Length: 210
Length: 210
DNA sequence: CGGCAAACTGTACCTAGGTACGATGCCCAA
DNA sequence: TTGGGCATCGTACCTAGGTACAGTTTGCCG
View 1 (cartoon, chains in turn orange, purple, brown, blue):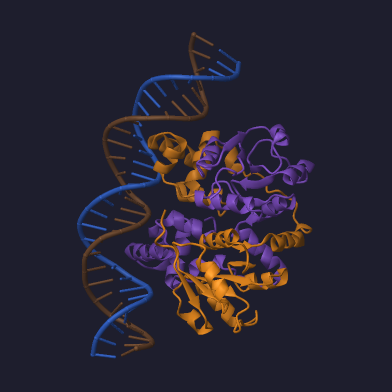
View 2: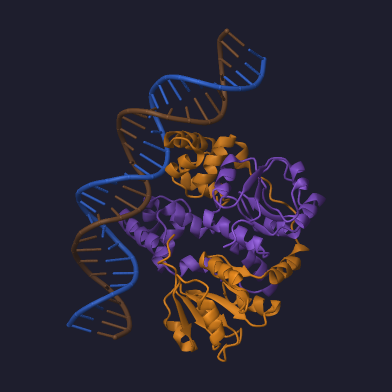
């Protein structure tokens, strides 16, 4: 478990209790408190920031600074009275997450993990509302299982899938319990069947890029 | 850490590799494989289920069974070729999550944790689309596009784009009127800036797969 | 039974891609 | 002026990936 390269957790809040709660979340992670907006510009790219909207300097949602912060940092907007409308605005300016600042520790930990891994986090209330919003107007076509599969055998599909996701031949071999040589054999026939030259072209085909 | 009361993880899939991958996620959690839809009705209320859409019996999204399964189970729909439209349909029938079945183990673990804690999980692609849908505006900013771009110089973006579309170093060189050596130089810095190891990983990042 | 496809493996080989050492000239801000 | 980022190029080197030319075993089908 790589614990040392966890990004520092920055907290912008005027509330002592908030700071204590959040810093107690993960003993292995460094936590730093921020009190003034001007400090944000000096944070290293990719830093993690929890932004408490209760902060006195919290700007309006159409303020341009939001975008620049969110561009260079991973920002979780946290409110003591969250609501869907504010959540949408927050995510809209580029936040990676929107949550209740007094959520239970397990949830907060989860939020941090999720955004650190590059995903986005919003609560179920907001998410269901978003889904309800679009579910009416859909091209009800469940995306036909594409043709590249049909040309391959079961085993070849497994190999193709793994290769298209960037796994090396060796990893694929271990994953499937076979030899690297056999993986190569499968790939050769896959390439020929699909008319591509290498695994990158395969990936583009599998992912519908080309 | 309460490890003993973790709900059993049920996997509906015909793919052996999928089963192995998922059961390897968490040694403390019991994993059970399901091969036939008829078994679903017999699962205990609140059970956790990962439903691989590649399964031969996978019903259409307007099938009533989806709702009844999702009502009594925590269902994560997993696709080997996820797309936003299918994701919306899946969440719409009541799924607690929608993800890539070949996502890396850390992500899968995260998905499971999130849905087990009662939240919903969808990938950033779908979520940003949902958010775009309600906010109306935002042409090409939503972080996914920008993120890798903004770390690169103009020239590097050109190279990255060509490489991510499967062009060889030589072709890129001719296209840009430079030497193959220079292309390599650009790629080396691109890889290091984006934290990837080769052009396939780059392609996956550029095309939003990983 | 014969034949054929699929899955699997071995050895040998070539090459594109990637890295490690360089190097040059340009531009711009401190 | 000097340092640093950017773009460009050279040579040498290593390796994963891909091919060629083998082979075995299994199971199915006419």
